[in-house]
Image 1 (cartoon, rainbow, N blue to C red):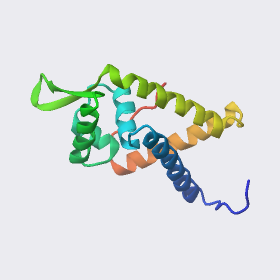
Image 2: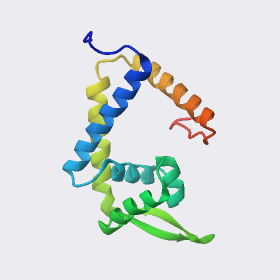
Image 3: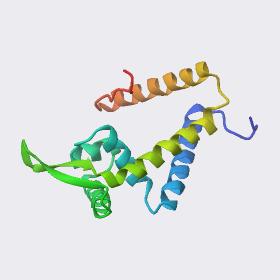
Length: 154
């Protein structure tokens, strides 16, 4: 490992998160999209039917920002808004079939990046890293009074 890297855990976590965002930004931009749009598509594939407000809370942005992003995704035929039958003031967001190739690309890119970044680690090291990061995420979620989102497999 290069000696020039800071060994402060929080700085390293910040740097790694920033570098990952940059990688996804570049990849999404090469496809004429933004990372934020990719995040919305990926989230809706895991949680179809979210409202714009729910999605904004999950993405930690203002509802107006999500509204603009969804407008663009809707114009491209990737997402549609459907009125909530229980509350017609609320739009529920659903993916359309045109989003499937993008979702497949996101999954493929994540898998390739996972292998590139973690492929040299033993499975036990990967599991320990994930456990530690989930612990940190849980603590931060609790400290912020946010609802805890379950990790897949829980």
